[in-house]
Image: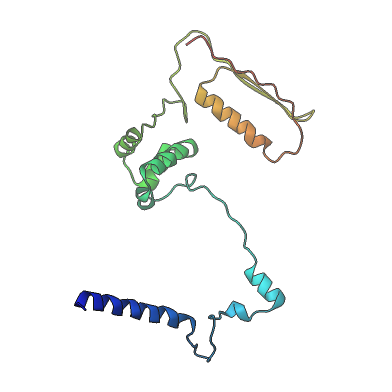
Amino acid sequence: MDDAKRIFLQDVKDKKRIAVGVHSRKGVRGYVGKMHTPVDFLKGKAKREYTKGGEVIVYNMFDKLMPKEEFDKLDDEQKKECLLRWRDRYSTKQIMETLNLKSYQFYRLMDKFNIPRYHGGGPLATKTSTTSTPQTDEVKTNLSNGFNISLHGKYSAEKLIKRLLSISSILEGESSNFKVNITISEDEEK
């Protein structure tokens, strides 16, 4: 028998002996069986209280600003998602201070992920056309006879999405039935 085969068989034999020995090994107190932890010695109500599930805490990692070290560990797709969410929630100055970036570094990062820069109108603002017609922006809310919202005006796609999401957050948790009439049409004037 050659050396390689003999070493292999000896190794297999040792591993089998070690694996079997774990299950039948005697503990310090002389018992054979599973290892006991302090919770195993609790009884009745005390054991149920200890093993009962705790409070569930739900959070979104993209909503809270994180230090630069944690941000750098994320992959590119997660970094882009974080930056998009942060732009809606925090100012550029807050984001730059948290990530410890200078403005040129911050905007280079924005360009890397193709995230548009703001054009002076707040989050997700887009350049508006220079037509002579004024933009109407009217939101009416009537709470005297229940819940009633009217939304009239011309909106960019991003701004309209934001408005509809804010309405959905108002309705969250309501148990009433609602009558809905939505009309959205594309504006021919550019």
